[in-house]
Length: 223
Image 1 (cartoon, helix red, strand yellow):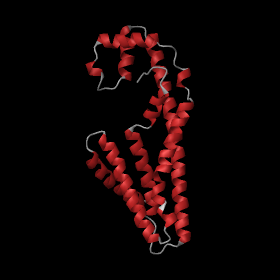
Image 2 (cartoon, one colour):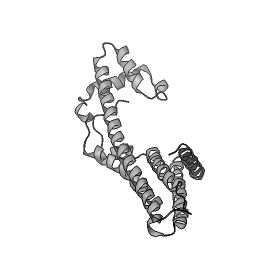
Image 3 (cartoon, rainbow, N blue to C red):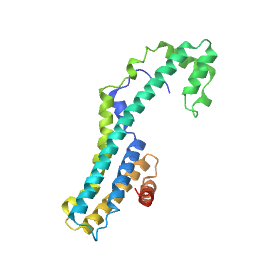
Image 4 (cartoon, rainbow, N blue to C red):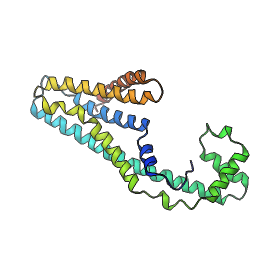
Protein backbone atom coordinates (compact mmCIF):
# COMPACT_ATOMS: atom_id res chain seq x y z
CA UNK A 1 0.00 0.00 0.00
CA UNK A 2 1.30 3.47 -0.85
CA UNK A 3 2.25 5.51 2.18
CA UNK A 4 3.39 9.04 2.81
CA UNK A 5 7.15 9.55 2.57
CA UNK A 6 7.66 10.47 6.19
CA UNK A 7 6.62 8.44 9.19
CA UNK A 8 6.93 9.55 12.81
CA UNK A 9 9.50 7.48 14.65
CA UNK A 10 6.96 6.40 17.25
CA UNK A 11 4.71 4.98 14.54
CA UNK A 12 7.60 2.99 13.07
CA UNK A 13 8.41 1.44 16.41
CA UNK A 14 4.76 0.61 17.08
CA UNK A 15 4.39 -0.94 13.63
CA UNK A 16 7.51 -3.05 14.20
CA UNK A 17 6.10 -4.32 17.48
CA UNK A 18 2.36 -4.54 16.84
CA UNK A 19 0.45 -7.04 19.01
CA UNK A 20 0.45 -9.84 16.43
CA UNK A 21 4.17 -9.43 15.70
CA UNK A 22 5.04 -9.37 19.40
CA UNK A 23 3.05 -12.52 20.05
CA UNK A 24 4.53 -14.32 17.05
CA UNK A 25 8.10 -13.45 18.01
CA UNK A 26 7.63 -14.56 21.60
CA UNK A 27 5.90 -17.76 20.51
CA UNK A 28 8.74 -18.65 18.14
CA UNK A 29 11.35 -17.96 20.78
CA UNK A 30 9.53 -19.95 23.45
CA UNK A 31 9.02 -22.92 21.15
CA UNK A 32 12.70 -23.03 20.28
CA UNK A 33 13.93 -22.85 23.85
CA UNK A 34 11.33 -25.44 24.88
CA UNK A 35 12.65 -27.89 22.30
CA UNK A 36 15.94 -27.81 24.21
CA UNK A 37 14.56 -27.97 27.75
CA UNK A 38 11.96 -30.63 26.88
CA UNK A 39 14.62 -32.87 25.38
CA UNK A 40 16.64 -32.83 28.62
CA UNK A 41 16.46 -36.05 30.61
CA UNK A 42 16.50 -34.52 34.08
CA UNK A 43 16.77 -37.89 35.81
CA UNK A 44 20.09 -38.63 34.12
CA UNK A 45 21.43 -35.16 33.39
CA UNK A 46 24.52 -33.87 35.15
CA UNK A 47 25.85 -30.35 35.36
CA UNK A 48 27.75 -30.77 32.09
CA UNK A 49 24.63 -31.83 30.19
CA UNK A 50 22.64 -28.93 31.66
CA UNK A 51 25.41 -26.49 30.75
CA UNK A 52 25.50 -27.78 27.18
CA UNK A 53 21.72 -27.46 26.94
CA UNK A 54 21.83 -23.89 28.24
CA UNK A 55 24.53 -22.87 25.78
CA UNK A 56 22.65 -24.49 22.89
CA UNK A 57 19.31 -22.91 23.84
CA UNK A 58 20.76 -19.43 24.32
CA UNK A 59 22.82 -19.72 21.14
CA UNK A 60 19.79 -20.80 19.13
CA UNK A 61 17.66 -17.92 20.37
CA UNK A 62 20.52 -15.50 19.87
CA UNK A 63 20.80 -16.60 16.25
CA UNK A 64 17.04 -16.50 15.76
CA UNK A 65 16.86 -12.98 17.20
CA UNK A 66 19.57 -11.77 14.82
CA UNK A 67 17.90 -13.43 11.84
CA UNK A 68 14.53 -11.95 12.75
CA UNK A 69 16.02 -8.47 13.13
CA UNK A 70 17.71 -8.70 9.72
CA UNK A 71 14.50 -9.98 8.12
CA UNK A 72 12.61 -7.05 9.64
CA UNK A 73 15.05 -4.62 8.03
CA UNK A 74 14.83 -6.38 4.67
CA UNK A 75 11.03 -6.44 4.72
CA UNK A 76 10.89 -2.77 5.73
CA UNK A 77 13.22 -1.82 2.91
CA UNK A 78 11.22 -3.91 0.46
CA UNK A 79 7.88 -2.39 1.49
CA UNK A 80 9.21 1.13 1.01
CA UNK A 81 10.76 0.29 -2.33
CA UNK A 82 7.39 -1.13 -3.42
CA UNK A 83 5.65 2.05 -2.27
CA UNK A 84 8.11 4.15 -4.27
CA UNK A 85 7.53 2.00 -7.33
CA UNK A 86 3.75 2.25 -6.97
CA UNK A 87 3.96 6.02 -6.70
CA UNK A 88 6.12 6.16 -9.82
CA UNK A 89 3.63 3.98 -11.73
CA UNK A 90 0.72 6.21 -10.70
CA UNK A 91 2.57 9.30 -11.85
CA UNK A 92 3.58 7.65 -15.13
CA UNK A 93 0.03 6.47 -15.93
CA UNK A 94 -1.11 7.83 -19.30
CA UNK A 95 -4.82 7.84 -18.48
CA UNK A 96 -6.95 8.23 -15.34
CA UNK A 97 -8.11 4.63 -15.81
CA UNK A 98 -4.53 3.36 -15.72
CA UNK A 99 -3.81 5.37 -12.56
CA UNK A 100 -6.94 3.98 -10.89
CA UNK A 101 -5.87 0.44 -11.80
CA UNK A 102 -2.46 0.91 -10.15
CA UNK A 103 -4.03 2.40 -7.02
CA UNK A 104 -6.63 -0.36 -6.82
CA UNK A 105 -3.90 -2.98 -7.03
CA UNK A 106 -2.09 -1.42 -4.06
CA UNK A 107 -5.15 -1.19 -1.79
CA UNK A 108 -6.37 -3.94 0.57
CA UNK A 109 -9.21 -5.92 -1.04
CA UNK A 110 -11.52 -5.23 1.92
CA UNK A 111 -11.31 -1.46 1.29
CA UNK A 112 -11.55 -1.37 -2.49
CA UNK A 113 -15.28 -2.22 -2.84
CA UNK A 114 -16.34 0.83 -0.83
CA UNK A 115 -14.31 3.29 -2.93
CA UNK A 116 -15.85 5.12 -5.85
CA UNK A 117 -14.13 6.40 -8.98
CA UNK A 118 -14.05 9.85 -7.41
CA UNK A 119 -12.33 8.42 -4.33
CA UNK A 120 -9.62 6.81 -6.49
CA UNK A 121 -9.17 10.06 -8.37
CA UNK A 122 -8.69 11.96 -5.11
CA UNK A 123 -6.08 9.42 -4.04
CA UNK A 124 -4.35 9.84 -7.40
CA UNK A 125 -4.33 13.62 -6.99
CA UNK A 126 -2.88 13.31 -3.50
CA UNK A 127 -0.14 10.94 -4.67
CA UNK A 128 0.72 13.29 -7.50
CA UNK A 129 1.28 16.07 -4.96
CA UNK A 130 3.73 14.04 -2.85
CA UNK A 131 7.48 14.55 -3.14
CA UNK A 132 9.64 11.76 -4.45
CA UNK A 133 9.85 9.05 -1.76
CA UNK A 134 12.90 7.16 -3.00
CA UNK A 135 15.23 8.67 -0.36
CA UNK A 136 12.66 7.88 2.35
CA UNK A 137 12.70 4.22 1.34
CA UNK A 138 16.22 3.91 2.75
CA UNK A 139 16.66 2.59 6.26
CA UNK A 140 17.14 5.11 9.04
CA UNK A 141 18.12 5.17 12.70
CA UNK A 142 14.60 4.41 13.91
CA UNK A 143 14.47 1.34 11.67
CA UNK A 144 17.65 -0.08 13.19
CA UNK A 145 16.30 0.74 16.64
CA UNK A 146 13.11 -1.17 15.85
CA UNK A 147 15.17 -4.11 14.57
CA UNK A 148 17.11 -4.09 17.85
CA UNK A 149 13.81 -4.24 19.73
CA UNK A 150 12.75 -7.23 17.63
CA UNK A 151 16.01 -8.96 18.57
CA UNK A 152 15.56 -8.21 22.26
CA UNK A 153 11.98 -9.45 22.17
CA UNK A 154 13.08 -12.84 20.84
CA UNK A 155 16.21 -13.26 22.95
CA UNK A 156 15.48 -11.55 26.27
CA UNK A 157 11.82 -12.58 26.24
CA UNK A 158 12.76 -16.25 26.52
CA UNK A 159 15.52 -15.93 29.11
CA UNK A 160 13.14 -16.64 32.04
CA UNK A 161 12.73 -20.19 30.72
CA UNK A 162 16.44 -21.00 31.16
CA UNK A 163 17.10 -18.99 34.33
CA UNK A 164 15.88 -21.79 36.70
CA UNK A 165 18.78 -24.00 35.51
CA UNK A 166 21.19 -21.34 36.78
CA UNK A 167 19.75 -21.22 40.29
CA UNK A 168 18.68 -24.78 41.07
CA UNK A 169 21.29 -27.53 41.25
CA UNK A 170 18.70 -30.29 40.98
CA UNK A 171 17.98 -30.63 37.21
CA UNK A 172 14.52 -32.09 37.84
CA UNK A 173 13.43 -29.15 40.01
CA UNK A 174 14.91 -26.70 37.52
CA UNK A 175 13.07 -28.45 34.67
CA UNK A 176 9.72 -28.33 36.45
CA UNK A 177 10.10 -24.62 37.21
CA UNK A 178 11.36 -23.91 33.69
CA UNK A 179 8.33 -25.59 32.11
CA UNK A 180 5.99 -23.78 34.51
CA UNK A 181 7.55 -20.47 33.49
CA UNK A 182 7.29 -21.37 29.79
CA UNK A 183 3.61 -22.31 30.09
CA UNK A 184 2.94 -19.08 31.98
CA UNK A 185 4.67 -17.04 29.28
CA UNK A 186 2.70 -18.84 26.57
CA UNK A 187 -0.52 -18.01 28.37
CA UNK A 188 0.45 -14.37 28.94
CA UNK A 189 1.43 -14.01 25.28
CA UNK A 190 -1.95 -15.31 24.16
CA UNK A 191 -3.77 -13.35 26.85
CA UNK A 192 -2.14 -10.12 25.66
CA UNK A 193 -2.98 -10.86 22.03
CA UNK A 194 -6.51 -11.99 22.84
CA UNK A 195 -7.13 -8.80 24.78
CA UNK A 196 -7.21 -6.93 21.46
CA UNK A 197 -9.93 -9.32 20.25
CA UNK A 198 -11.96 -9.34 23.45
CA UNK A 199 -11.07 -13.01 24.08
CA UNK A 200 -8.05 -12.81 26.37
CA UNK A 201 -8.62 -16.01 28.35
CA UNK A 202 -9.59 -18.13 25.36
CA UNK A 203 -6.60 -17.06 23.29
CA UNK A 204 -4.28 -17.42 26.29
CA UNK A 205 -5.31 -21.03 26.85
CA UNK A 206 -5.21 -21.73 23.12
CA UNK A 207 -1.67 -20.36 22.94
CA UNK A 208 -0.55 -22.92 25.51
CA UNK A 209 -2.03 -25.72 23.45
CA UNK A 210 -0.60 -24.44 20.18
CA UNK A 211 2.84 -23.93 21.72
CA UNK A 212 3.01 -27.39 23.28
CA UNK A 213 1.81 -29.09 20.10
CA UNK A 214 4.43 -27.27 18.02
CA UNK A 215 7.14 -28.23 20.51
CA UNK A 216 6.03 -31.86 20.31
CA UNK A 217 6.12 -31.71 16.50
CA UNK A 218 9.59 -30.16 16.54
CA UNK A 219 10.87 -32.85 18.90
CA UNK A 220 9.29 -35.63 16.84
CA UNK A 221 11.01 -34.29 13.74
CA UNK A 222 14.36 -34.22 15.50
CA UNK A 223 14.36 -30.53 16.35
